[in-house]
Image (tube, rainbow, N blue to C red; front, side, top):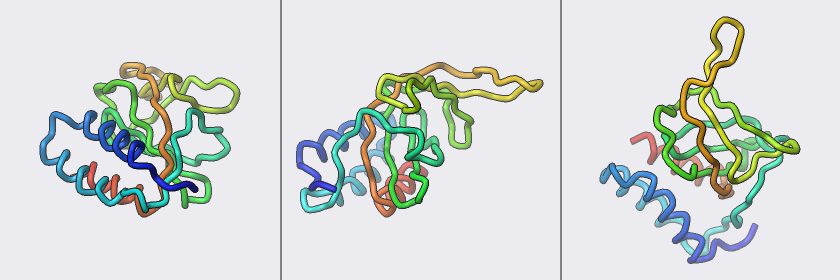
Length: 148
């Protein structure tokens, strides 16, 4: 892992806060969590693609943020969708349009539901952003801040 640069810290903070601009309380909570990610914190650079064998599950945090969990459970990747995906909620089932066994920035994700033995898209299709690697404690802090 590399040191988390101040420019990347700022970019991540802005990306998260921009996605939550309509909720001042959430902004304060996220700001507090992200303030802990200073230049001395170990944090990996942004990744454009994530091979499917590296993650085990995907958690919807809100209409614009997804948290991918590694198979070992010690690494996470935060993805801020390119725009809000209205109707996307925690516990939704997602469908990804994949190429080459990896999920990448600009790939599309949709909320789906199983009806009469078929999967049906029940929400908008939205574009993924870049993947920001997190440690388990960092992911937990962000998860808690997003739920408040």
